[in-house]
Length: 171
Image (cartoon, rainbow, N blue to C red; front, side, top):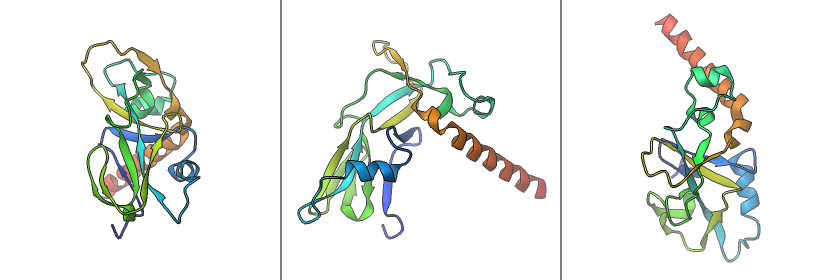
C-alpha cells in the first residue's frame, strides 16, 4: 500500500487494454470526470472482459518477431463475441488508498466516499487469453486492438531478450 498508487488486479493470462486511449492514466482521467471531490471520488474501476481463445488460429498480420517470440497478445486476435458484464468476470484497477479489501473480480470493501466507475468495453477491456474447450455457441470476432501497441511490445521484448543474452554471455 505504501509503495504503489495505482494497482491493477488481473490474472497472469489477462491484460487490461485501454482501447480508446494510449495508456491507463489518460483513460482514467477521462472516465473520472464528473466526480465532485467534496462528496465522493472515483477510486475503483471495473473493466469487462472477453476471451481471446488460444485454440483458435493465430493472426499472421504481425511482424515476424511477434510470431517467433510467441507473443500471444499480438498473434491471438480472435475473441469470443461475448463481452462479460461488470458483475461477471470483470477485473479492476484501484487507487491503493481507496480500498481496504479486494477480491478476484471486484472490490469487497472500500474507504468511505469511494465510487466505482464501470469502464465501458469500448474504453478498456480485459483480454483474457486462454485455451477454452467450451461449446462453440460464441463465435469468433476479429479484434486487433492490441496491434496499435505492436511496435512498442516487440521492441521491449527484443530488448529484454538482448539483455538476457548479454547476461548469459558474461556468466
